[in-house]
Image (cartoon, rainbow over all chains, first blue to last red; front, side, top):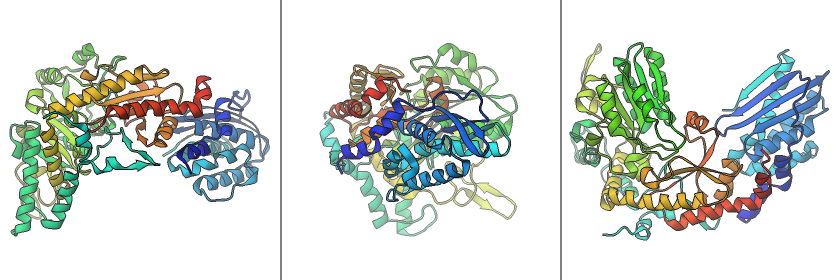
Length: 156
Length: 417
């Protein structure tokens, strides 16, 4: 594969579209938990609010600063998890992690636009960028389950 | 003899490498430099001909290895004009370990609660974290000198921060991010007038310009071999003899003792008191070949070449629409590191695009997170030049940066972030 093609595979149009027009950017007025995620090595930052209805993520708001991969991944994730039961979200999270750690794994069908991030798996140093939003979400869910209203993670 | 960069490049095998079909453009020299064949050969020659442990063996190989190891010490000492090369040069693993040695062996012995350790806002983590640790252990306080928007120390703040409570001034000679060259001589005088010692982090300066420890007037000076054509795993600590003599050892073990009983030991003479255990013999010896190479070119000529190529890079970067350059803009007053950002593009995205074209730069916080916050950014891109870089590599960098427009053009222009 030529180097230009490889790069296009990493930076697919869908990723750039999410980077340019991030979804669910608005801050949720009534959130059950706010979660912050940092990757001090890259300087990537994610900030999100989650609203729950029973065991379902009823609403999500996400903003951040960082590279295109980290921010597009957060935007894509927000679209996929909104309205889904927590159990289902955790399953999708596992699927996404698997896709990131194994470039040859078959791409799951229910990941929505996140599928476009498949090319990231070939660039080992960028995988953390793509998973930051998911790790932040996971911590938000955990803290909510413990009855806390705030969550914070820092990637190693 | 005139400086022939094309001829110099032939001495560096790695510069023939292709990355994805394109010639390697190596612009990450502030992280580590490439190695000339003579350094690589010195390593092979040692292992093939006289590999032995030093300072103890009474056989031919041990004598040869010891002589070569000690010859590098003297060479290094002369390279930075130490008054007593045989006693004042200590080999460590890297600059970081050299600074930790001083912070522990000097700091823990002489610092008391309320004493002040002064450093600058542009320090690498390696000249920051060791002092934070020793401050915690001793009750000493940390103070830092502000920098202005151009990346120079604010002189009024230098004068304000160094006072009668100051016991240590720890300062980068040349910033690894901004390239700023700090006025060490003037600060040495201020520090000494206040009764403090001055440690200079010279990891960036010794590779790039003539450095004379006696002219600088510093008490300690730390640098690494791998940033000046030598192998990884070798650091240098220069220390004034009278200071090295008053300190206790940093690490204990073999090689650093004179007489040992089960209860106590007496220590070896300088500099061996600070070199516990078998040192990195092969790499120290090969470091000697790196110094020979630099002296063959002459550090004045190296510096002159670097000013030319860095000056050209500054000019091209600053005339490129969308590039913001941090730090001093005059190549004659800075080192070979040029830090910048391009539009709103995150430096990791930029670095990825450049890597795809065979261009190696550094992107991130450059081990200087407090400085990034001072510059009001989380990360930057850094191109750093060395004695083998050419102006056509600067051109490749500029073209490479512009090539990111193909992918990110409309995104970053829209200011999506």
